Amino acid sequence: MMELKEAYDIERMSSTQNIQHELWPLDEIDPKKAKFPCCIVWTPLPVVSWLAPFIGHVGICREDGAILDFSGSNFVNVDDFTFGPVARYLQIDRKQCCFAPNLGGHTCKHGYEHSEFGTAITWDDALRSSSRYFEHKTYNLFTCNCHSFVANCLNRLCYGGSISWNMINVAGLVLLKGHWVDATSVLRSFLPFVLVLAIGVAMVGWPFVVVLFSFSLLLLVWFILGSYCVKTLLEC
Image 1 (cartoon, helix red, strand yellow):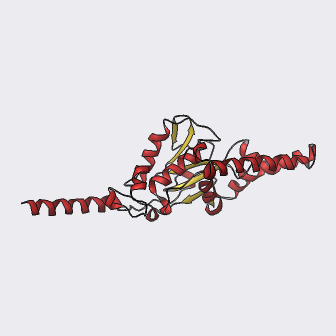
Image 2 (cartoon, rainbow, N blue to C red; image 1 turned 120 degrees about the horizontal axis):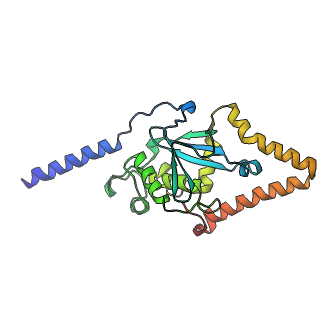
Image 3 (cartoon, rainbow, N blue to C red; image 1 turned 30 degrees about the vertical axis):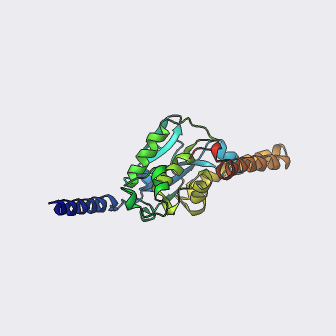
């Protein structure tokens, strides 16, 4: 009887893991309906992106395409991207994620470390866990923002075999590999910056360019220091 019970438990566990790890087909990406299944999405921020166009607002999408974004203290927005339509997106390959129902089910190299950080058995499960976590976080553009939320989701998924996602590499991932939705999105992202630059040069002269690029450099240095040197500065 004991042998039969053990065989049954093993078979049931195997069956459960197959169900949990089965990757259901995703619907097509549909920008008109704002549906981006398993994508990281990006849109420019008012004022901030006018001065530093590489900075924007990011969110991450459920398997049904609904966008989730950390847009304020104790608040994760669902299916209503806070700062306007998506301008750029990158669909994530779920096969590069680690869905571990238990310590023996890890497909990543981290094992216990991944479990301590927080694992997920499905894509949506990771997003739900991160949403609950950030519903108790105070939003701050410089220390705990939308990039922190997306990085937390990717770390729970161990996307690409990594649990070291942060603001910098999330931003780089979208900016370097992301796809533009259309030509209008490109204009919406860069035209305000070009206009601000042109008006500033016309009114102040070339010192305005120095100030503008110094502002961008200071932001970049802050996030690099917080992400890689003084990791307690930023939340991920």
